[in-house]
Image (cartoon, rainbow, N blue to C red; front, side):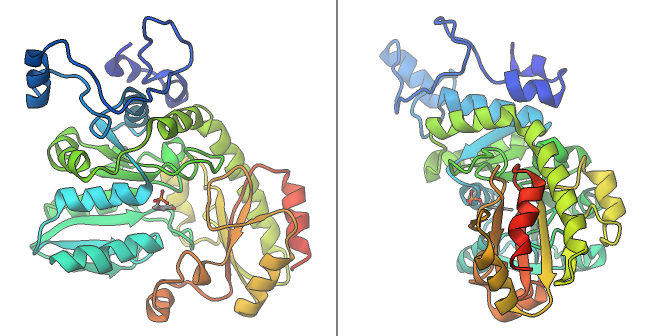
Length: 393
Ligand SMILES: *Cc1c(COP(=O)(O)O)cnc(C)c1O
């Protein structure tokens, strides 16, 4: 079936079947095309393919059948017109910037984005004359006020890392479009299984496939999904030249990851919800950040915008960094790693790891306290996860 036919199927079905064009070998599972280049029938054929007049593979920096299958499946699951896969989530974000921005442009970015995303705008795009203003994720007025005549796009993550705040995607898409800007949403925390930003008006979605899409902590990869023309005209030429392509092996791992994504996300969310409620009852815990809790500032918005509340919980301990490190060091089972979206529960101290390269002022403005601990809740038995945390609490 073609990409178009799969549009009529639900996400659960697309996740398992879309993207695979069975070859003459009748394979049931999608093959890994380990080939760097492709051959042509004739010199004429080669010339036509290089001009783009004839579709077909040329070189695996441009296209690869296994990577194409991943791209097709992702595009359908996000309800986007087109997807491009990248070597990492950061490579995807880099490509969006390289493709869309020029010197003199302006970006408005949420203050609560992945640490390397902040550095990308602040240290690298700034070197080439692109100015970025950072605003409070949930303050719609601040977003609108930060927009200038030369603003090209708004960039955000929702839920945010590590404070799990929720942005109103639809409202921000309206603001962006009223000012002739694009809205770009990093959908790593929710994945299309929980939230489809393009259906709410976002123009592009970026992904780190490294997280829930792989789901078992094996490969690094990324993706950009969205409007066909933006991707075809502005981003694909950069990918072809810039070269941060996804490897076919990684695409094959991610394709398998997508097959169980919805099922895993539901289980992650159930465990995270239970853990958030349990943490709230612990004396050593000052505050729990989880949108499923009724005291979360955007609880209603999360209910409206997401299918479930997500698999990441963060919380502040009474005390400071010392208490946070003590808790982390007391665990026996949880993995002390900054990665998230794994079947294994991971625990991290954002202020000294993922957000450690930010200046203390930027970190404070983002609300990331020294007492904050982030847990990406895995799929182990919830009672074993709680038991492991109890020692340090
Ligand atoms: C991990 C992550 C990224 C970067 O992805 P990599 O695959 O590590 O390059 C971007 N955004 C979010 C929200 C992430 O968690």
